[in-house]
Length: 237
Image (cartoon, rainbow, N blue to C red; front, side):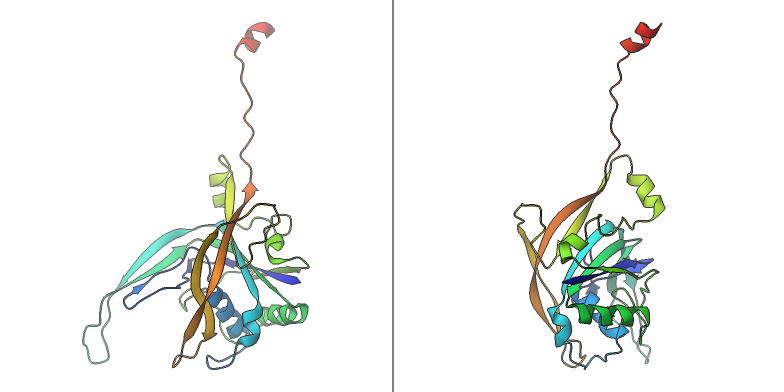
């Protein structure tokens, strides 16, 4: 199988999977519905167009820079001047993710070409969240989880973040459709998430459930500690 690797970064991102009414939450990593919605927009699909071919894709995420949760408290009035319900919308600021999309080679090639020349504007979850570039990193002939390892794609975090965590090292979360992480360990089921889009049609929006697995990978080792022996100074005197 072929895996397309994308870099999701920008000032704001928001990946809702369970938002209700006046609270618009975000998950800590991109959702499958958000990733497939971005692909559909790049291909020029309308919300009412079928997306069955995209549902066969496997999606995985590596959290290269987790970002910070931001709450946006909003007030609004309708066109008649009447106050609307107060709402809270949540975003991730300064987050960076490597997103892997695994599928048949021909389908992946078409998706890559569409993302490089999108028909509709692309955004990271919400229309107020445009992506920074580069968005498309590369394709690799590896299964999803192996493609997300640092041997396949280097750490994509901002320089200021890598400098901040260099003393302690950094272990990135991996969130994937697949539980085959190739390290011989069994990984517990993290959760089931209702973020597989059956239809984006505003008149009949539907989502189904998927199984999400978690693992981790070291992107930056902490510096080695050199043992200090104060008596060595006396021996050299």
